Image (cartoon, rainbow, N blue to C red; front, side):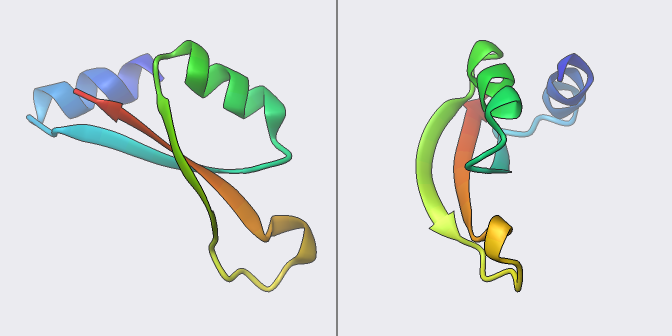
Length: 61
């Protein structure tokens, strides 16, 4: 997570955006601990029942 943030800052990016399956609670906890903000939940249209809904997160740099 630190590498991605440092790299994005170095490349003058404005934000980092992530999507995570809603049942992946360890990843969700990590993203929130690292300062990412919840943006919303979407269906990415994947053909798998267990991968239908994803939470979106964003870190403004």
